[in-house]
Length: 127
Image 1 (cartoon, rainbow, N blue to C red):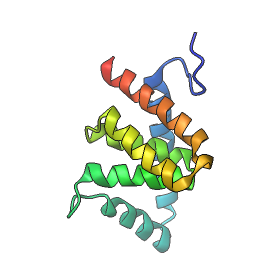
Image 2 (tube, rainbow, N blue to C red):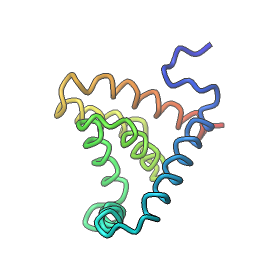
Image 3 (spheres, rainbow, N blue to C red):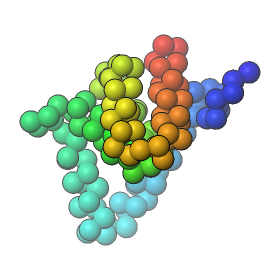
């Protein structure tokens, strides 16, 4: 029996549920055709494209910002993207250490959930 706070039985199901909710809600939001919202979503997407920095580095930076801002949904999103970009466990922990240093002890609960989520991603990847 798992004692993980995010234990949903099947890690891939929990991640699938997160992704489906995010995609469904983004579609609903964008369907409103609000100029400011649509432009912001576009800018957010374009900012993470490769440029002087590669995509993985930008996603790791997004993870730091998400930890400091204490946004668990954002942390999950960037962890998923980091996994897709081939980040290693060591890279994730080093990145999280920067988030903890910048954000202070208030980040610790979010760090716990981030590590739990990363472990889910690793289990899903190795399944």
